[in-house]
Every structure is written in C-alpha cells, then in structure tokens.
Amino acid sequence: MSVTFEKLMPWSGAVAGLCWVAQDALRHTSTDVPGGASTQIIRDHLGLNYGSQACLVVMGLALLLTGIGFLVLVFRLPGETAGATEPRAKAAVKTTAVPTPA
Image (cartoon, rainbow, N blue to C red):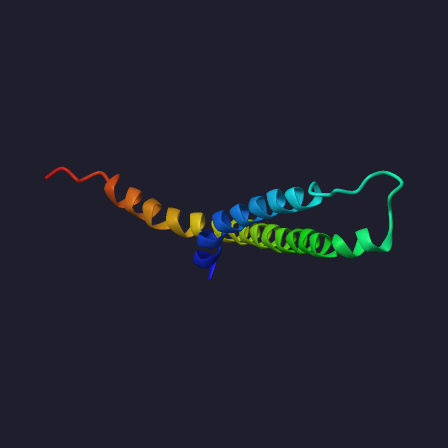
C-alpha cells in the first residue's frame, strides 16, 4: 500500500500547485468596481467563486494525501532499515570469522 502513496505523492503535489494557480487566476478575474456592488454582479461572479472554492478544496485534499504519504513513509522506514541491517550484520559476522590455521 505504501508503494501507492510513493507513486501518488509527486502527483498530489503537482495537483495542489495547479489548483493554487487556478484559484488565484479565478480570484483575479473580477470586473467589480468600488461602489458598484449589486446582486447582478454577485450572480455574474457566482461561478467564479464556486470554481475558486472548488480549487481550494481539491488543493486541500491533494495536500492531505501528500501528508498521509509522508506519514506512511516515516513509519515504514524505521522497520525497513532495521530489517535490512540484520542480514548485513549476519553476513558481516560470517565474513569476519578468522579461519583456524591448519
């Protein structure tokens, strides 16, 4: 299962970055002028507001997935390193044995 997180982590970071750029672009496309607020302007920008909020939600989920992936890696690595050093230690003991003179 952690292999899946390892493969998804770079992509989730890329998705989060794209969502950040998209929400920023959507927020700065306003044609609103100070003092000209009306319900028509609010209705006209409703789709932009929903799109911007959707980008923020997707970005949050992508970052959450990235955080879970890092958490899985952190808890998985100590067990793997301990298991990986045991065969090496046994091999080192076997190779360092001093042969008896004949």
